[in-house]
Image 1: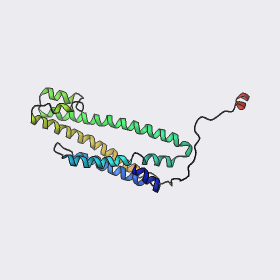
Image 2: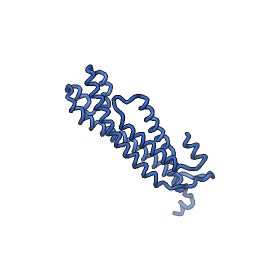
Image 3: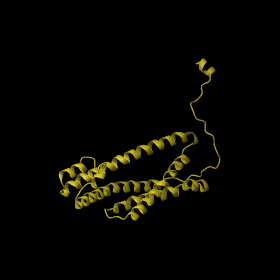
Image 4: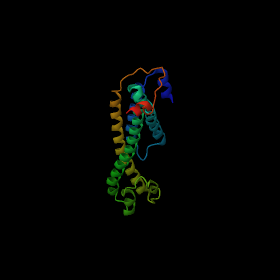
Length: 201
């Protein structure tokens, strides 16, 4: 909401793009330091940094896109932006999950734990079986599994931090446009064919 007010008042959107990508990259990078013993206050602070960065990027990229294309292409550009954003979000979740599970499959078998525990977390269901960590009776084994989760998540956040850094580089190429203060009405729909011209053809 604050970004929308800022853009409306100043007409500037590139600064928000830059700040959003930088904060998101910093937040994703700080996730790498999460461990089993990370205090909750530190978790909240890092999530706020990353969340603010993501929040900055909700509106600014769309404004930058709409400021670049012609009035007639605004609807097409907006729809394409929404499609690509949804597609990228879906791929992001899948790729992150694959990275996390592949690292769990590497780390857990090395911990010399009972076979039933290894089976629960290495057969593609580590994220789904996270609640089973609390059911492990041995506190030492619980800590080993938690450490394996933190180690595996760290690799996932490396991937996300790299993608965020690429976003920083991409945002540098966004050109400055002066946002118009005049409302322009855009006609939408299919082109009308007159009945007379249709009968002549």
